[in-house]
Length: 117
Image 1 (cartoon, rainbow, N blue to C red):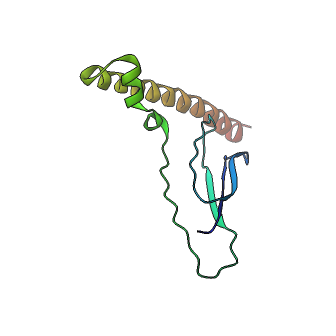
Image 2 (cartoon, one colour):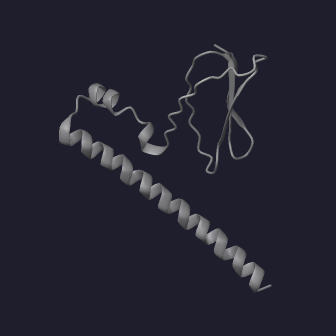
Image 3 (cartoon, one colour):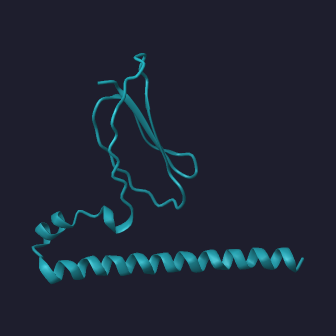
């Protein structure tokens, strides 16, 4: 099996993950930077026609939580677990609304400066 290399880069060009000459592996990262992330995978192989399979499970937001582990640790199940998931979803939505309001103020201020100068 050919070796593969991979790299994940943030919207600001920061390398969040980098590995070389791996045949198998998995990784995760957490970040607060908003924007588009770039994941690159490549094979440094002299063999023509050689291939590799990459399975990618990209999760963001509350989907990254290991709810089974949380349920076991806190001894919760059923409706209580579902309520906990909903609570985290509401907190995430609230944080996104605050972010959007902040962006709106910045955008409105920029427009005001452009058209009223």
